[in-house]
View 1 (tube, rainbow, N blue to C red):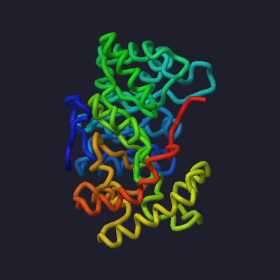
View 2: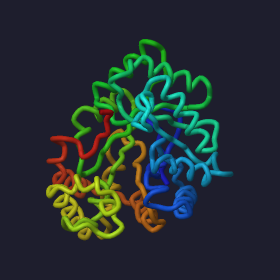
View 3: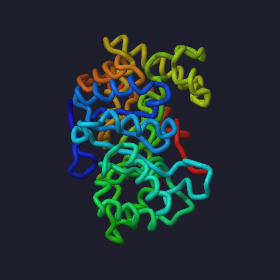
View 4: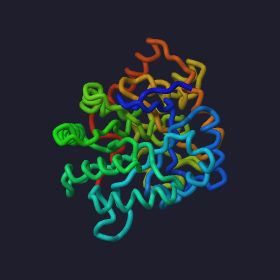
Length: 323
C-alpha cells in the first residue's frame, strides 16, 4: 500500500480510503465490520464517515469495529448537512458543530478524530465563526486536522485567506466529487489545491458504480445502488452510461476491470491524496485494492483523458449543498 501526505500536513494516508456511507444501510453491521477489518489488514488506514450516514449508524458501527484497533486508523467524519428538524440541526455554526462533534465522538467510541470535515459550505454562518470553532476543536485535542467538502473554489480560497489572516488552523484537504465522469474540479479547484497545498479526497470515484461496468443500459441491476436508493437514478444519464461502456471496453483491452482502471487513473491525478471507495461486500474491496498496484502507461492515461474530456465541463456529477 502506498501512503501519501494529506496535503502538506504531516499525516500520511493510504492512497485508497474506505467510504462507509453504506454501512448500516446497504451493508449490515456484521458485513460492515468485516469490511473495515479487511481494509485495515490490507493497509488501508483512511476511514471516512459522516454524522448523517445511515442515520448515524455508520459512525456507531465504525466505533464497534475499531475497538482495540483505533490507533491503526486515520478516522475522519463530517458535519454540516441537515441532521434533524430543529432550527440549529444544520450548517457550520459553533452551536451545531460543537453539538455534532460530541455526538460523533460518542458513537465512534473515541476521544478524537484525525480529520474533521465541514460537509458543505454554509452561506448562513460567517466563515470566521466556523474557522474559529474548528481552531478551538484542534486546540482542545478533539480534532487533529480539518478539511472542507463540497466547497466551490472561491469559498475554499476565502476560508484559507481568513485562516491566514486570523492565525487559525487551515483546511488541509477538500473532499469533492471527482472521477472520469466528473472532472469539473480540474477547472479551478485542482489548481487552487496545488497552489495552496491542499490534498484532494475524491468521493464518487466510480460515479456511484457507473464506471464499474454494472450499468450496461438504463436497466437497474439487482442489489445496485440505484435499486436500493431511488434518488440515485438521476445520475443514470445516457452520456454517463456511455462513458461507463467506453471504460469497460478499454479495461477489457488492458486486461483489467473497469473499477480498477478508473481508480488507478484517479489515484494518479495531481493533488489527490486518497481516493474514497465504498464497499458492501468484501469481494468489492478486494477488487478495488487491485487499483493500487496498477501502473498506467502514458498511452493508457491519454486514452482515458480523451474519452473523459467532455466531463471537465458542465455541472458536477454530484455536489451537496444546504437549501
